[in-house]
Each structure stands twice: as C-alpha cells, then as structure tokens.
Amino acid sequence: MASFSGAGDGLERLLDQLKEDLKTPNLSSKEQSDLLAKVKVYGRDPRTAGPIFKPENITTLCRYGLDKESGPTSHEALRCLANALLLNEPSRQIVVDQGFAAKAAERLKSDSIDDEFLACRILFLLTYNTNIDFNAIATEHQLADSLNKRIAQHSTAFSDPGHNKPQSSLMEDMALTEALKLIFNLTAHYPNLIPTFTPSIEPLTTILLHHPLPSPPLQPPISALINALLNLDLASATDHLPLTTHLTHLLSLTLQTTPAPSPDLDPTITLLRRLHTLAPPSSPTQTHLRTTLLPSPADRAQPLGKGTNLPARLLQLASAPHLPTLRENVAALLFELSGSDPDAFVRNVGYGNAAGFLASHNISVPPSASNAGGGSEEGLEDVNPVTGQRWSAEEAGRGGEGPEMTEEEKEREAERLFVLFERLRATGVVDVENPVKRARDEGRFEEVE
Figure (cartoon, rainbow, N blue to C red):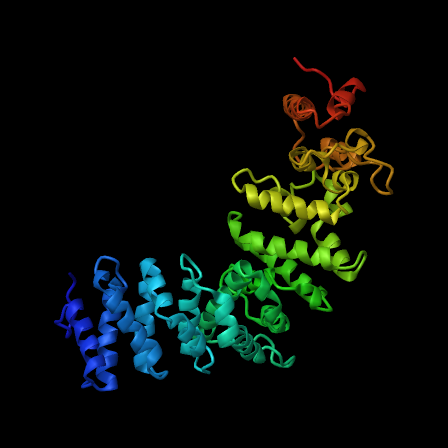
C-alpha cells in the first residue's frame, strides 16, 4: 500500500477513527476534515480503496457527508463517497437502502456550489444499477424543483443581453455539468418526470446560446446542455430558431475542428431532427435547416459531398462506414429535410449519396434517379442524378480547370457506379433502369483498351 507524507495511518485505521468519533465525539471539524482528506487520497485508486467499500464504511461516509451540516467536513466526506460509488457499484445500493439518497436530494436545496456538484454526482451515480425510486424522491423531496432552481441560477449570468458570453468558473461548469447529467438520466428513465423540468427549457437554452465555446465545441458543459434538452418537451418553447441556428453553428465548428467524426455528434443531430419536426412547415426554423444543411446550387459545381462546407461534410458523415448510428441519424435528418420524399431526397443529395439509406429502409427508388436530366425541377435539368453535379460542370472540368481524368479513371468510375446500381437492383428494392448503363448506351461512356 502507498505511503502518504504526514499520514502514517493505514486506510483501515483512518476509517476506524472516523467511526469511533461518530460514537464518542472527540475530534474537531478540522481534524475530521483532515482524516477524510487522507481517506480521499486512498479512495482515488482502486488498488488502495478496497476497505472503503465495506458497508459500514460507506455508511460512515454517508453520515459525515449527509447527516452533518454543509461545510468542509461534509464536502470531504461526499467527495470520498462519490469516488467510492464510481469505483464500486455495489456501494450504490447501500446508499439507497439506508435512505441517504433522499438526504442527497435534500442537500440540493442548499445554495452551495459544492453541494450542487457533489449531490448531483452522487444522485447521478445512483441512477445506475440500483432499485432507487426517483419518482418517490422527486415527489417527497422536490428534486425537480431544486434542479430547476439550480439551472435558473446558472442562467442568470447569461440572461443580460449587454453581458455577452461571461466567463464562468471551472467549479460552476462542473456543478452545472453534473446537474445536466442528472436531468438527462431522470428524463430518460422516468418519462413521467419530463413535465416537471419544463421550467428549465428556457434557462438551458439561454446558457447554451451564450456560454463561451470550448474547442472543440461538443464537450462539457456544451454537450451536457444538448443532452439535457433532448428529452424535454420542446413543443412548449415558442421560438426554436435561435436554438436551431446555434446548433447548426456548433455542428459546423465541430466538423471543422475535429479531425475525425465522432459519436458525440449524435445528440446534436437528434436535437436538430426534433426541432425540424416541431417547427411548422415553411417556418423560419425549417427554412434555416434546409438552406444550411442541404447542398446549394453552387455546391453542384462538383459531385455532392466532395467539398469542405457543412452540407458536404454531412454527406460524408451519411456514408461513414465505421459510425453506423451516426450515419443513419445524419441520413435520416437529410431525408426529413427533403420532406421525407424519396424523389426530393435524391434530387437534393444525389442518388449515390441517397442509395444506401433508401435501400436500408426498403424505400422504392424514385424515377428521378434514372433520369439523365435529373428531373424537371427548375435548376436541376442539367444535373447528373447520381452524383448531383451539373453535367455542364462535368464537361467544364474535363476541358478546363483541374487535372483531367484519364480514360482508365473514367472507365473505373463508370464501372463503380454500374456495380452500385446492379447490386441494389439485386436486392429487389431498385426497379429502374441503371442510369450508368443508360448513359453508356447513349454514348456518354466509351470502352477503352
């Protein structure tokens, strides 16, 4: 076991001293805090923390942390307890069985930022692998009211329009993050509690809109704010446009600053889908999402998904082979932005980008996928339906800017697209003429030696 300067005592002896003082008080508050600080050092390492996990020692920490008034001694004990619950899952049920979860909920009524951080962290850990009934905790100890109050307090500094992007302290951000994690788990596992957190929607949105952004953006507390909003009744909010605009900005920044796509993007995509669904047709929210996330006419100067702007990066995510959940989520967002209309979807993103989603959902391929003119919609008569690029841009690319494709490269690309269509036809989902075959029959492609 590790040795600690000035401590000398083993962990067992430290815990015995603390237990004895509960029976016969002799130690000052500072002496209690000093002993608990030494226990905390042992408790950070699973190799030395074992004795803490005994039921009687978990109870001892609970009594120091939650039976005593808020203060340094209580906070040291709660830090020890939080570490123990993180490292040892069976310890969590001990806390529940002895009624200390209710006391942790009561502690949230304190105005101390340390109490908020520690009580929320402990309650959050109790949402995993225990038989705790948070419905009873919420009813009897006003848990939702306490959390709503804490969120409102955090938002106060961000509510003044003249006080743009205030600097929040590290401890405030840590406490906020723990409260947000607890709200997310409560609303995910106890849907009947969702309405009780409606008062937090506006404060959460205010914090998200005005909190300084870390780099990359999607890390706590920003990521926790997005997660906390996911399960709430956003239909009660009157104006979704500011939140929608900010989320698309966060998405763009993240894709610019993160070397590789990550599953951390999923909550942002999911929240954008919810906001799109809740917005009235042709509302500013829906219009913003379509104009920001779908390819523009200018993007059709090259095959869709080949650029570096936000629509191109989303199309790249929609075909990311190593992130199936994110890939499905992004493709579903683009499909919904197309009015859940397969024909509009193909026109918007090109059949090469739409094919996988349509096939996996057994959606019939629309006629526009095989229409060499790309459909009759204004501005799309000159579009390659497979790549989404304008035929005229392809022609210009061959004879103008950039290195021209060799005949072998052209043949390989044609073969790749041909094989893609034939594979999809074999699934029985696609029942249209292969546009590559049609282009070849019309003389657009020639066999080379």
